Structure formats: structure tokens, C-alpha cells
Image (tube, rainbow, N blue to C red):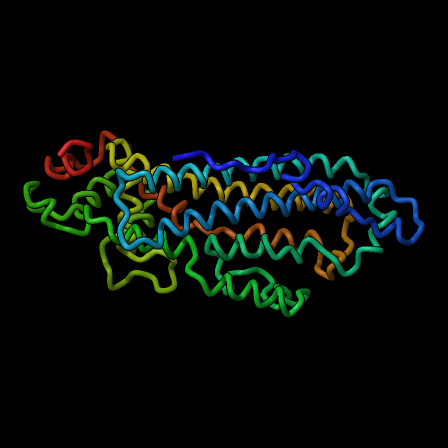
Length: 344
């Protein structure tokens, strides 16, 4: 096939630098006020929004993968998902470190132009709200729901609500976990004394608990043994929780290595978002003290409430309470071992 001739690509035109480098319009300059650090403030926040756009791009790819009705664990899809989720972790690491550049702006430097920004606020970042919704932060679980949409335009409110109506990555992950057959199909365990995997595991788990940990066994029964008692309102179904724990327990088997990487990377994203929020809290406390935010929020107090409650994959994190060391794990039947290996 003959290569098509294309016009030359020029660096500044390709990157649209004329638009980007002229997109900083300090409010202080409009008012004739000397506020040298407003340029830094604008560029930092514009950079955040560009990173948020990239995060949404990566999440869109991952979500499209998990919208498929079936995903084989030995196909490129799982690797591609893990790769892109790890990229999000890398972006969030940069976002946290970037806060240090903003912290070179002293409280007095900020006061030079702060009042000119009202009511603009980082709370109005639509992309960040869409990131949270895309990951799976449910509106009902948000801190400060009454304030959540109050500072947005009708157009942006519609964008956020549209994002919340779509299937989140959390929901798609639940659906994927539910489809895994290993602990749901009891036929797998018939050559192992005919006992249910969860009964075998419960016995080993119960023997590992100290007297002070006996309440863990009650919760174990609720989540993994007694389906009728499974708590309503959890993000993960009983089957999804079982399979997630199974992946964590037997991650050393070839076909479970990438699913395990996927689950742990999602936990890393939660941790990275938490670190970003807490770094933001400390910066706000240092910069404005107990003043209210420019958008009318309670400032650091609001940020602290959101940071403590906005964990998306907390049910995955809770599963570590039910792990056993490898030498205590029930031995898997040969058929299951074979199914978890790369050979036929």
C-alpha cells in the first residue's frame, strides 16, 4: 500500500501552543493590582485539568473493556486495563507532588488576588466530579450533598448527572467478578472431600483468629457463607466479594495474576486520591486558615469530610481482613489448578 503524503506537522501547531500559552488571563491584571503569583495559580490549576482529562481518557478505555459481556483472563484486555489504571496512579503521583509547587505561594501572596476569584473554586471542577462518578462514587455516599451541585451552572449540573447515570467502573467490576466460575461452581470441589470451598476456608480462617478477632468470623459468615444475611446496599454482590477474595488468596496462579494486579491497582487509585485530598487539606489550612473557601464551602473542614468518606473501592480494601497465609490455604483440586494455569 502506497504511503499517503501528509503535510508537515509543526511543533507549536500540533500542540496548539498559541491557544494554551495565551489562556492565562489573571484577574489582578484586569484590575491593575500587582499579584505576581496569580500566574502560578492559574497554570497549576490548568495543568490539573489537563491531567484530569487524561485520567478520564484512560477510564473511558477501561470502562469500554469491562462493558464487554465476556473477558477472558488471558487476553490483552486485562493487561491493557491494568496498564492504563497504573498510568492513572502515575498521574495522581504527579498531581500530589505538583501541590508542592503551589505551596511556594505564601498566604500573603494568595491574599493579593484571592478575593478577585469569588465565587470561582476548585470545587467547581466538573472533570474531577466526573472522575469520581466514573470510578463509582455514588451521590448518596458523597459528603455535603446539599452543597455538591449548588455552585455549578445548569449545563455543568447536567454533565455531572449524565456521568452519574452511566455504568461506573465499580459496577462493571462487580459484573466481571460475578462471572468468574471458580468458587461459585461447586462441581470444581467434588474431588476434594465433596466439601464447599467456603466451608473449608471458614474452618482454616476460624483457627487463625485470636480471641480478640472472633467478631471477624461473624462478618466472614455474613459476607461469604450466609447469603440470606448479606448486607443490602453494598457495592459488590456476594458472588463478586467471594471471587475478589479468591483472587487475592490464590493470586500466584497464572490466570489470577493480572486480575490481582487489577484489584490492587484500583486500591492504589483510591489511596492516591486520598493522598491528593489530604495534601490539599494541609495546603488550604496553611494558606487560608479557618476562612471559608472562595466558592462558599467551609474550606479545610469540608475537604476533610470529603477525604474521609470518598473511598470508592473500600469494600475491596476490607477483604484483607479475611486473608490467610499461604501455608494455611485450602489445597485447590487438580482441576481448578489446571484451569488457573496457561496450559490446557
